Structure formats: C-alpha cells, structure tokens
Length: 164
Length: 164
Image (cartoon, rainbow over the protein chains, first blue to last red):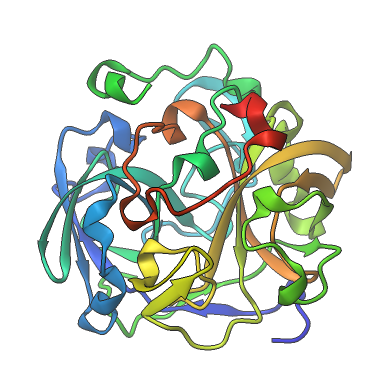
C-alpha cells in the first residue's frame, strides 16, 4: 500500500476467538469492568508462538471486533446521559471500523493457546484482532480530562481499588 | 457474520490519515512518547460528525494501521534487549493485523476535520482506523506487572512528568 485514501481496503483475519458467558449483547455489561465473569481467549494455532512470555504480564490490551454490529452512527447517546455525542468520544460498538478495546487482567495461561481474562464485555464468538502488553508508562495518564463524561460516568472502583 | 474462524475476512476503511514529519520508519522514534513533533490527524469528511465534543478530552486513544508493514514475525527482538519475545508482548508493527495504538495528547482541534496531537510514532500517510476517548478509570492500571520488560524499558519521564 503506497497511498491511502478513504476507499482503501484494510483486511484482517482473526487471530483467535473469545469464549464468553454472554451469548447476546443484551447480557453483556456496557463496560468490561462491570463484569464478574471469566473469559477464555482462544488463539488459533498459527499464532500461539506469538504468545511467548505473555504470562509475565498482569494486564493486556485486547483489541477485538464487534462482529454483530451493522453499520454505524456518527453521533450516539450512551448509558450516561441523553445527549448525542460524537461516536469517537464514546465506546459505542456501532462505530466505523468496529474495533473494541479493553484493558483486561490476565488471570492465567490455561494452555499454549488459551488465556483466561476478566473484566470484559465481549459476547461469545467475538473475533480477536490483536493483543498488546499493558505498560503503565505508556498508558497511564491519570489526570486526563474526559470532556462530557466528567461527573457523568460512574464506575465501581470497589473491585479494582488496588489499581488506583 | 454469524460464525467466525481463522479464514474470516474483516474489512475496514480508513477514517482519516496522519500527517507526520516522519517520512520513513527509520526517522520515527520507536515509541511516540519520545517524539517532540506535532502531528495532524485529518479525518475524511464523511466521519467528521463523529468528532463532536472531542475538544473536551485532553488525551485520545489512536488506532492506526502500519501500512508499510509486510507480513509478520511471531517472535521478535525489540530495542530493549537481544532476546526473542512473543510479538504479542511487544509493540512491533511487524505483527499479525498490524494495528498500532498510541495514547496521545490532543493539543487542538484545528478545524472541523483536523486534530493536532503529539507523542506519536506514525509516519506520514498512515491510515487512521479509530479514535476513542482516553478515560483514566478504564485505562489506568498503574501497578501492572510488565513481564520481560521489567527493568529493561527506559522511558524518559521528564517531558511527561505531569502525567505520573
């Protein structure tokens, strides 16, 4: 690809699949941190060599594809208020290029091709696009300003208070 | 898409393009936090309504496509040591589904379709896949364990000390 424009096609293949107790979107919380469940990330065998050393990381950045989303809205409401917001200021899965991102605790490497994680919102069968190491020095911006979400979003810190 | 397997094609289109002073990969730092440059994120006009309210966020999560990468390595060395590591424990762009992620300060909305950001490693012409709001309560895990990177990665905190 030498030159890019809006018609350029970018094609990916799943590297694995998420096994989730949530079978439909309505069962899943709207953010993974509200979940008390565990999830299996199953990697296809041609990619498992890429997981070498993953056990040493307590958290991973999981990128997955909202495969049940159809089309997108450029502005959307959220669970937090009744105002329309730009979709790029939300986590709505009904977005252009429906890539979802969660920072998830890595609980266990169950076997060579399976990782057990928690704090996820994905439904069963969700394709995995990528995982990356979670590195605080690259991702911690604790004083970040959060625009319209300020004083609106409510996350329970109870179960994750050790993180703050 | 009802059932997913490793042959499933997932197709995206860029929502915009990154204008960068780095014209070739060799010019770019290996992590955006080492950059002192500014970058323009130009969004294609059909997506700009999705940017409503973005100005209120001090940082965004930028997902972009390493469009110059060809193929992938499942294990790779990094600038930090001479050992082979699983690619999913690294930020190498030579990875399956070459999606790159940076948390970047949003400096300015220059006009309806252009955002100015810093701390990026992307080369000129890089396609933008998605942007998401950076929300500390979802992404701050400051005590995360970082496996093989422990005591190896060296980031200058000087220029970003206000974040820690």
